[in-house]
Length: 439
Image (cartoon, rainbow, N blue to C red):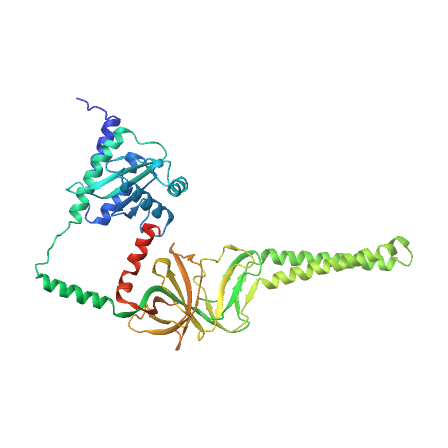
């Protein structure tokens, strides 16, 4: 007896059962969160999904680490918070943009897909502790909302199983509790120095940048990273095949122009026409000579030499060898190993008030037990994107003693002014509260 060919309904049901199975087999909350925002794309076809727990985005589709200050994260948290406050997200439903404020609607048009669906996550008492924001190009139908409701119950059950709440009670006398509370309040008033940790790197101080002098292909690097060089040493050699050909052609063209000028000069005494062409031919000789000199200059630029003594600071020669570069493109830096400073990338969320001269302590990744003292010299006013995709302020600090080797990385601890212990502990929560309230 032949088996019946499965239809669309059977495939949908199989995918749905697979999602429930993955939720039950998740070994950690992180694994479950990843499955909740990624694995349902095959069934529901959403462009992106966001998992919110207690009003904060915990996971995003295709993102391994959620950036709290990202525009899309801020939009989803603000929109979900507003709708939950209105009681409009008690069950799985399509999100109505008319219930949002003007700023949220504008952000929706630029950051999210046209249609969105909210799937609440409820605990055993029916209280919403989180939810899924799903967005795609076409609306969600009733059958999909029914499946999402069931799937939301499965996800909520799995999440509570992986992160169970453990209620506890203090059974101490009331007077003892009041005494402890009073002691804690006094403890929170103790002034302490504010401090923050940030990634840092030892960089050259006053180094000479070596840039590409012409458009071309790098044939080879004659130095290695961190190698000592003297003034005049050959650093980089460009492919000079075309430059040599241009110089040879310019030399031959100059010879032809000089020969033609010489021949017309000799005939000028007997031929009036030759006499009239002497000035034109002389100008042409000067033009060809200038072209020859320029071709020779370009050929000389194909070999880049060090203008000062120091060490060659660059990452990897293989990355640029054999690849075309543009004029002015940075190749390396020649620096004095005894002259170095500390470059710090302070994330926006960790920024505190820092004054020039603030104390800085560096702990290198290669030597975490030793401390290198430094003083803050400059701090950028505007945050810029880092290689890790985060927004950070650039800070420069000067070492008080002999600097470590250029290129070493580590963690810098920056010390600010004194503040009560309560402010030190609650600074980031208060900032998050202010951002959530919009004041």
